[in-house]
Image 1 (cartoon, rainbow, N blue to C red):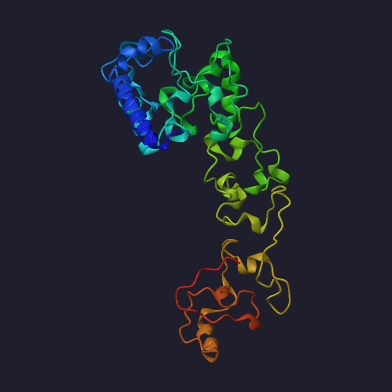
Image 2: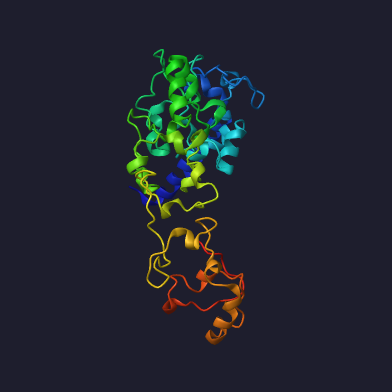
Length: 350
């Protein structure tokens, strides 16, 4: 090889390539008849005109609408007309902000397949739906009539958030009686139990609230009115109305006497105050609870007039008769005296 001619060959090749490239680019649109692999779709499912065109077929002879030399199809060219897709990707809303690889539109929307091709009906094989959303399409590839399902069957009006997925329209048409009964028993939150595989999503209720003994046979709606599962109170009184025998007598601290096994037998299991408070002799309940069982009345036995004098040696100068005794004497014994921490103390509950 004659090296002195080598630089010239490179320059010549660049010049020829540049001339040819310029010529190809200049006549890019006119070469479509030789380059096009097939007709463009004339289907317009939205019924709207984008960029002045009602379908891709209207600019079939203008290849540069979608194609650029070397780079071929680019997302920016598609989004010149499909500005709603650009908005989804920019604002991270809608399907195109959730799917990976949406910068390559042709991965899902394949053109040049004829006038009747519906390129918006994305092949589900292009999307790992289970990984993306947690819902498998294993049982949702075909409609009930045997035709192929498309995204819009479930994601009506282009809504892709889980709470906006429309399951009922198809299933009601297939078996309205079954779905009506199912909805009445389990609510309308289909994705709360179904993951698309045919199996029921398991939920360990014990991680939230232990369903034991008397609660094992409770139905969902017994505690979750209108199938609202968040913010449900775990207090007994939220579900159980106070019986007449309790009215104004026992308060709302049910767990002091009852367990989840059953309401009866009721047994007082939480009583900090000594039951043998008077000279080691067990007291009757009404000795302290003369008005109701959720209030303690000490002054029936301890006259108010005697208390200031008895408390002065104990350095309780701010003692007041309205102060609850159990605030300082939680068990009723002299050894458990708690210093009074101010005038604002809570009323007794023992």
